[in-house]
Image 1 (tube, one colour):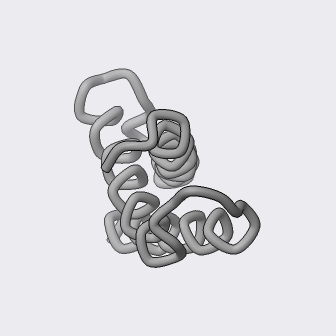
Image 2 (cartoon, helix red, strand yellow):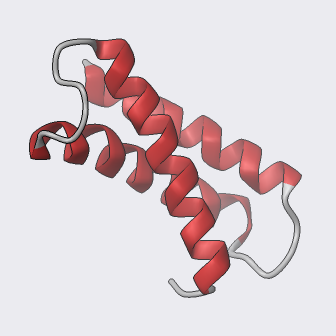
Length: 81
């Protein structure tokens, strides 16, 4: 169930970033895809590696939001796929 929440968080973060930031990007659909990927990588990846919280769903969701923001930030800074 936590993965469903991660996908939803990534979708919302990607949608918000796509709406508020303009510039050289893939548009809202691309931001949503990167947001979802970053959320899953941030939430599940950090928890599996032992760097994040494993006990609480809230902690994993916060890490998912941070992962989505980080993925979108890196994509805009590096300007790569």
